[in-house]
Length: 343
Image (cartoon, rainbow, N blue to C red; front, side):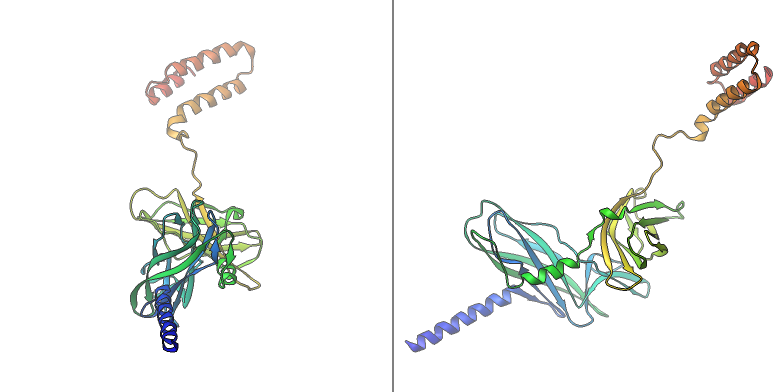
């Protein structure tokens, strides 16, 4: 009987070991695991999950816009019916410049947060949350990595925090803040030279800024160049110059990404999400060529009033203007000729 108990305990340890391997995926220079903020949740809750990537010292993975090279980390979820994954919440990356290539990376470790929405119709019990994670880990060379992560979640009548719940506050603090209060604005600085065009990005700031930058989202039709130039960073306003390279179609109507700023007195950098439309001239505005004739008629009328203030000549002015209007559809040269003829 005692021998059977020992065998049973060994069996349980082996099962636990297999489960632990399923939870954590291992790459050549990185490992990834799935962590939950709660261990028990109610139907209808939104559960925050974290895909935690830990790389060897000096190795890095990539942001959602990897930049000139690299590949963003991807998660393919395998979730039970009644559980839906939201978009990845990406922490602000670091900009890495190597020779003529600039990329956006996470060095040593990063955490990608994902909200999981639970249906109100879920039944009590334990459910398995699975995902296949793929990433590119790089130092001087790059190695693709992938693996399956897994975590168990109990569905019950109350919400109970997990042993990792305290970590989530620190991880959430690394996410970009909403940039609605920045009053960000963007405008073209000048006309394009070839497929490249400069723009000015500005936003309001409550601090004196020492460092400022812009990390753009990616697009298939254009590329915001990673090089930026800080034009000013006075208290209350920050201005950056950047460039857009057009890949296809028209010039973009808006750009989105993350603005970065760090105060002059030090401290951590602060990141904000922005999505701003380029300031445009009002559509349908008349061009000088299409309004020149009518402008000349208006100027002639005003000039006539000033030069001919005597009441006896007002009927003559009116006749002149009516004559000009009647000839508005004629060639401009002909209109000018008739105007000189009656002077």
